[in-house]
Image (cartoon, rainbow, N blue to C red; front, side):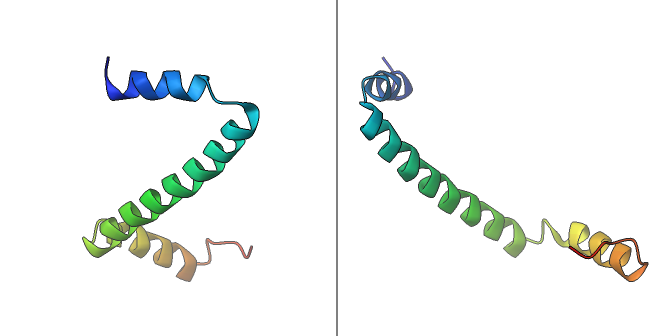
Length: 66
């Protein structure tokens, strides 16, 4: 049995309070991982073309004020 299958069984056995705490923890954990990945992409220049396109659209008046 692999790690994922073991985790699935463990998670399925959680009480509702434990599940609530697990969801809170996992959301925070996943958010940190997402932020790290975005930062890696920014530092590697992978979002430069998207940023240029957005700035160009904005200077051409194609953006909306939020």
